[in-house]
Amino acid sequence: MAATAKSLSAYYTALRMILDNTDQFYLLNEQLYAKPYPSENREQVKKTEAELEERVELASDFSTLSGNFGKLTGSTAPADVAASASKLEGEVETLASVKASSVEQGALKAALQTLTTAAKEHKEREAAKAMDDAVKGLSDLFAKEAEVWNSAEMVYSTIGSTLAGNLVDGNATDNAALLKVALDPFGLSPSTASADLNAQLAPLAKQQIAAKKSAMDSDYLQASNAMATSLDEMSQRIHTVAEDKPMAFRSAPLSVSTVEKWTSQIMSTGSTNTTATAPAQPASKPAR
View 1 (tube, helix red, strand yellow):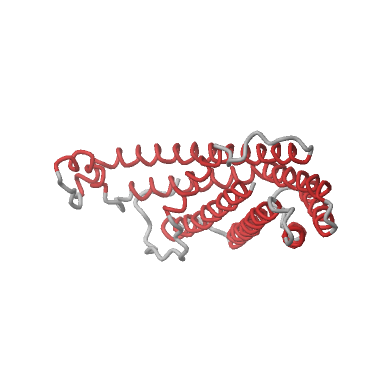
View 2 (cartoon, rainbow, N blue to C red):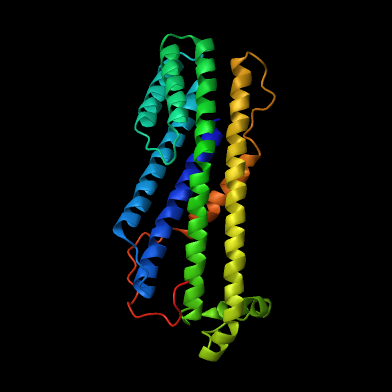
């Protein structure tokens, strides 16, 4: 469970980066194409970023709780579990809702309250049952909010790919990089393309943008589904332990690797994290 919760924290971190870049896309559209980005819209993006940051911490602390819970029979473990569960309870209490998820948050909070008490009182069977409920609560919360995060990724890829296409149309890109496939085998590198060559390569550049957008959306959906599968599998495993049955698997679910691959890709692209300062002159093509 610790590995799955850690993966969930990375997943939320990647989504937060996506929101930050989406904010920058909107700013560039406003600066280059006079496309309005109202302050209330930007405030909503920033609010959602803050809510994601809360989930990053929640998932990270859940990973810590899981590690402590695995050592519950140790001399100091009950106090560690109680402290971790109590901290998580407070985080759930202040967790902003991006969807009508009060039922899921309430169930998670109640389970953590029970876990805190059971751990303090060294009632391991009750603690196991409470941990079972807490893990299920985390899984249910993720499932309830999945639609919101799916929408955020779609906006990110759509706005970003449209902006990139507009920049290609406005001759604001160097399309010579598309020649690398022909030159690399011979140890050659493309130079800055002439205006004519750049225009000739523009259709290929836009095809590449479209293909990349499709791959981005597909990779995200695979990662999101894999995250849900991992949480569900961990919930089932914890339930097995709570029922005093032997656990068949102890390694992290295979689906975790799919999430890790996606988060690594997003992290490698980085975040702009700056205010757009592009020149204010209009591009040659209107924003679509």
